[in-house]
Image (cartoon, rainbow, N blue to C red; front, side):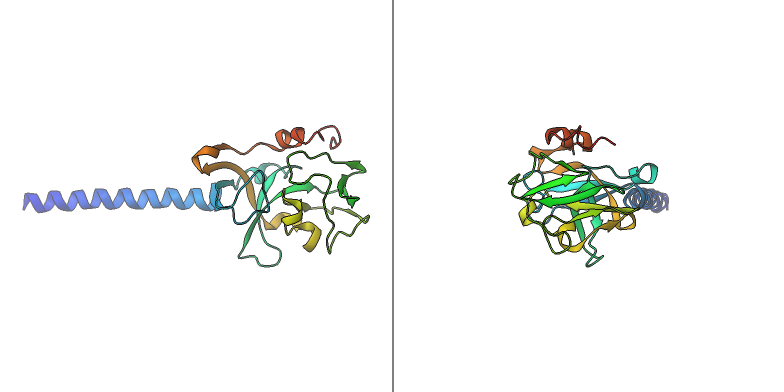
Length: 198
């Protein structure tokens, strides 16, 4: 009898541990951080196919997204699919693609961290030489592998409500383990820090 009682108490302790662990996981997954896998080559050379990242889901409840942030968001074409791209334009910004270059508020971006700088193609939404202003609560996003990315040039702006969060930590492969550079780090790499000052 004592043995069965001990076994039952051990089972209850185990069950309680499982339930608490699942509850903590659910809270973290729903409200704080969410794992995502990079699918495709649209963010090369900075993010590669099948890399795993954690998405911070709380930062944008405290402050607005910034230029240069790498974000995960629901595809405007199919909300069941999540995309990863970089924010190029925030509300009020003027975006233009001309002669293979991206212009932000009239200043050419010198983005050394992208594939094929100086060879950026326009798209169906943003035509060569056309300029758009980013409206309130919307964002213009592009992949770092500019000519192999479906992004705002093709299907337009994304809304704040479509953003899942900011990519902030890469945990696989282990060779790339660590924090994802901040917007300022990325923009400084691209020599555009002065060009995007508000």
